[in-house]
Length: 264
Ligand SMILES: [Cu+2]
Image 1: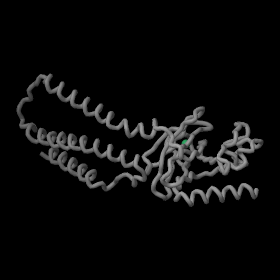
Image 2: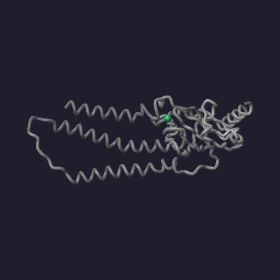
Image 3: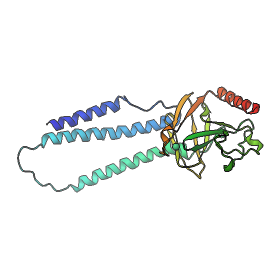
């Protein structure tokens, strides 16, 4: 009796906690994030109803068939029921996967819009760096031998290439609100991960590869970018910030950085 009651109480408490959203995702700041949340909600509704019914029935079975001192009896399996719930579970899981593919493909398989801002990311143990093409709109050539954190050159921008003279590097990523971004990601050592909760976007950064990630942030603000792949002893300290600026402020920031480079 007590066990059945405990099961019902825990089930109800869990449902209330989820339904009341007392501990939920941070705000979604673009269309993709809202679609992601909608898919998550739909999946949770379906699995939530099944969870509720299954746990309530379990409590009922414990209550009804609890030991009354008699002998237990052997019961054969029921093939029809086995087939029904195996098929049901398969349809449910495959259906949920198919429903989610569009949301996933929207980030990973979409074309880069023509008005996208291209930004480069370089990850290393234990920091992220970002590079902008500067006033000329061209990224300077890079050379692995010229990588130097001490000289503020985490990308190894080739000093001899004039296109690299105005390249802006930053430890935080600034993007204009409402404009698509193409982030080209590379790593110097091990696998890292670029993750912004508010964008609902998460992508590994793999050494030896250049991985494109497309996203758009619509709401100005400051968001955390924690490295989300265990990458070594300093992993817990590896984080950056995504600063979403109104488009005019973004242009101004780039101009200011350009001025600073000219004064050097
Ligand atoms: Cu890392």
